[in-house]
Image 1: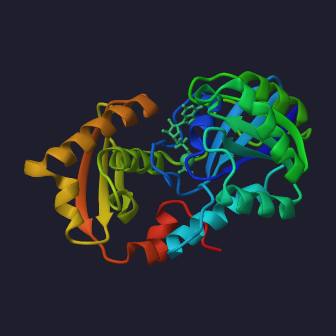
Image 2: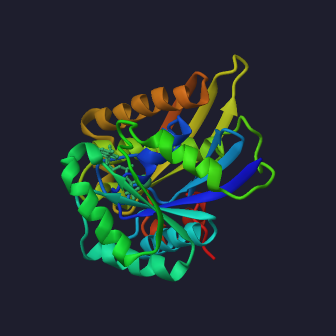
Length: 294
Ligand SMILES: Nc1nc2c(ncn2[C@@H]2O[C@H](COP(=O)(O)OP(=O)(O)OP(=O)(O)O)[C@@H](O)[C@H]2O)c(=O)[nH]1
Ligand SMILES: [Mg+2]
């Protein structure tokens, strides 16, 4: 029996959450085409052979500007420090840039076992992969190299086989059928936040947080979930609500379908939008989205 923590570290948008979902086989971590989608650490549990692989998806590493950003980045690095193996996820289409060099330099200090995962290989010609692998290997003590397409699912099984064989021996920490330790109320709020990332633009997704206010099972076993979307400025409220409430209805309807699928239950979703200036500096709001403030 083996059990170990494996952190997914990389730049924003590298495909970490897509990779976690693909490895777990369930949509646990939200994904969008925008950067800085993931805000907290998400645990995904994979049973592979006789191993329990505990994957930690982390926020992308970027230059923090506000307190929320700083906490996102420190939560990501803590994920790497706590892990047995760190997967360094690199978007091959973007290649190396200043942002990546900063991550590489910090990864060196963490002195953990680092595996390189070149992602989005479906987007470039195969001839470019080897030079990129060599470049990164010259800069970091990489133990193993993998080439995957998290979106298409290619290369994932090889990565899982290798992790299953290499994580430390030990008892499983979670029941073998569990997929995550995240409470359903947090997963529900994240799915609503994902819809906001998909349906709004520019600064709006970053000015928003979502919390579940109540989560109740009804007599017919369906679930009623009341959520609140906090926006940092009053003029963002009508944008989220949309003309005649169309946007918020769309957010609610799409979220309902996703949450029902994830929880395998029929769900009823009620969303309120509230202005809350400075929510991104409030400890309680930051804790509510799963960030570790210490
Ligand atoms: N073509 C292609 N697109 C991918 C692949 N993996 C991820 N993507 C896309 O890349 C974008 C970002 O994916 P995410 O999984 O949200 O990236 P992330 O690294 O978790 O991003 P942050 O949470 O912001 O740090 C999404 O539009 C994905 O669909 C891949 O293998 N191939
Ligand atoms: Mg992510």
